[in-house]
Length: 76
Image (tube, rainbow, N blue to C red):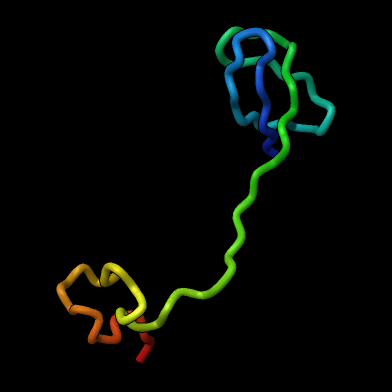
């Protein structure tokens, strides 16, 4: 089932609604109005991979004070 983003024209609430079909009737979870505007979908993209060692990170993923000198993120 797809999830769509909507904004209610009556109370201005923004919400995500799960729909059985693309053309299913929807209503605002706040005021129960059927006057909703479908918003563009948002998505995330990965532009580059994370560094493998702590040298390129601000915080060590292992949560210890390594000062960027260890290789916590590397698979051994």
